Image (cartoon, rainbow, N blue to C red):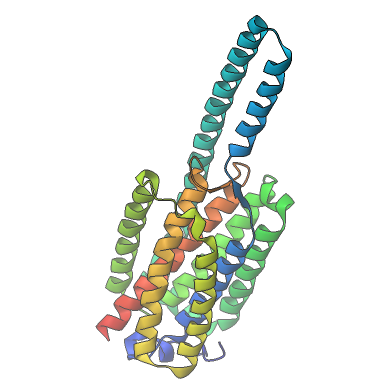
Amino acid sequence: MTDFTPDLAATTSRSGTVPVGLFCLSVCLSICQSLITAIPFFQPEQGGHHSHRCHTASIVTTTASAATMDQEVYAMEHQMDEFAFSEKSVRRGFIRKVYAVLTSQLIITFAIVAVFVLVPDVQKFAVRNQAVFWTAFGLTLAMVIALSCCGNLRRKTPHNYIALFVFTLCEGYLLGSIAATFEAKDVLIAVGATIVVTIGLTLFAFQTKWDFTFMSGALFTTIIMLIFFGIMAGIMQSRVLYILYACIGALLFCLYIIFDTQLMLGGNHKLAISPEEYIFAALNLYLDVINLFMYLLAIIGAGRD
């Protein structure tokens, strides 16, 4: 990390060398993602409630007369139907809220990136004021830890929105500082590719019958390995390792987008996030999309060198 020195251009893709700043940021965000994956905010879907209700119904039926039994069974089925309908309504509202927050985050982030890429004076400011970069770096980690570990902060309005807004601004500054070291057309291609891939994977996660939520352990293990591989590639400064690292990272976060989308959907999937955790769900998907963008940008930049 100490290689991200005052001369930012010395570590850019424009100079044909490995962008150390991108390594630092990608490893940082991978650590954030691994922290979130390690914390079990998701839970088994609601099968347990149905079994409990059915057990209650069986007790009632064994002690009631035949006529009362029919009435009780009908009432129980009616209650279960109402419960299922109510749960689906809550889940749909939860999904809309998550995507509203996520869209706002991405608009703010990529607007900041556009300013850094298109305005030379802002690029010069970023180069001359490295302390701002590292302050944003520290705040990013602090906000992720706070939002992940502090349930009251995450669920209490407006504190959760304020914390998420601070995190988004800091992340936008970090991404903007890194993106400014690439050609504008490379950044634009990476943004477009990220949007297309994210929409495609989201649609796939919505309609597929395959359950990816059982992969939490495998994804966590893989991202830990990716972090150490990224540190090694950054130390060795090998262009081949750099491209390989970026390709593996892009593939991994494609899987994460599907995984986190299905966690949000609930339904017949093995695991689901509680509807109260809309900030956590939005943070999950935001980190997935931003990581995918960074790795795609690294691949595109390396391909042009």
